[in-house]
Length: 615
Image (cartoon, rainbow, N blue to C red; front, top):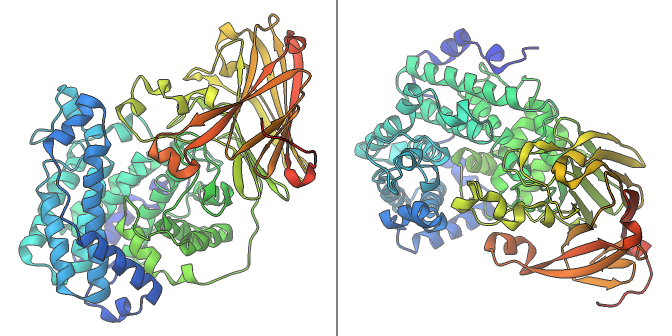
């Protein structure tokens, strides 16, 4: 089997498949009324209601002063909110036009398209690297910053032309093709040292490439240039896939998978569909493990195992489409089943940052509305990514190793998540609203990035620092009726902590047992274990109960304190509410010896009947 995307899609094949004149058809246009009239009534009603709500307001205004706020104050939201609202309204109005054929909705799309084409830049302030290099708050004409959302905007406009072209005037179509060429395709061909190609490989690479693929397939009239762009996309996807672990794990977390592995799928779907299967990159050997990742991280409903900047809930039904297509092309029934479950959620089909391919695909793909035999959740250990996810009857536990220079990293080597009856109770908070600080040298001053706000020990007063050298060692796992996982956290802490070894062992059967065994160079001054808890916490000596989970600890050797942790950031409180609890277990003097151990047990509360009272 070819081991690279280039091997699967060689240049001569790309040129043969794309090097002939003529446009491609990737989705039904507005003129195909039978297709759009056949959209199920429930979807139709929800989308039209959404469109009416969007259209009832004025078009959002983008101000230079709000763009400048990022450089001056670190504020991303003031500019990004109207920026994304514009694009979302274009999508909802386009869907209304497709569903009804009504000229009113086409006119609204045209208004939005011209507004977007008049924007000085399609790049977000946080990604405006040319202005940043000049230490200026605003972009200049001629800046070439092909970031995620410049590419995404190009893809959006290309889809508007593709879907509504027969209803658009010639000036609007020319404006679309000219702007997309000048802002997206020509810079991509003329600049070859994009940071997302040469200096880091995360979701930026496939996300941008998927939109480059859409722009060139849907808008580029020159067959030779079309093939040239696609050949570079193929090479770029190889850069991403070469960096990706063989186990298919996404170190950025489940939500970022939708723009990492999920965007690889978007690119491959476009190439496959545009050429009636001639360009088939789905045979890449890493695609099947990538496909399996998102279902493996699922807890229940919208809850997912989350590490790094990943939120604990995913609420984007349009992610169903790339996952489903991967499930079809890699013959992975768990992925197809999970995609259907995502599709059935009652979240708005058009997310805050919509991709038209996904929205249209999720709306029209008949396979997302069929059923096949149920496939149960599988326990998984990803040895390259160093993530374990295992389940018993009522419990799910996840444990991560890895290192502290992962993409969207938190200092969280050795942290765990425990869910009971489908709800996380020992949690990873995720990340708050992005600001300039989030991706700056001051990132780790944010509390959600610190190991003290993950489920980890504070050793001799030392937390985990950031950096590739701060890592787990020796991680291993055995899956089965009694799952075990072990790793050493000594190298995740600075040398000053005086750790020779810090062995963390997890055992899952009817309960989760977490045992830390250490060997330190001297008797420790202090040892504190932190656990972040979701739900009202009740305490008596030796036990903590949080909702349906009971946490048992050695009260003779550990003193417990429940600390309220208010959440004022809307991105966090939307998931966890206004407050969570940080449990601090502090070692009493008998435990403060160079070599020792302690165990904490997590049990479903129905297995633990002891009476507890509120602290």
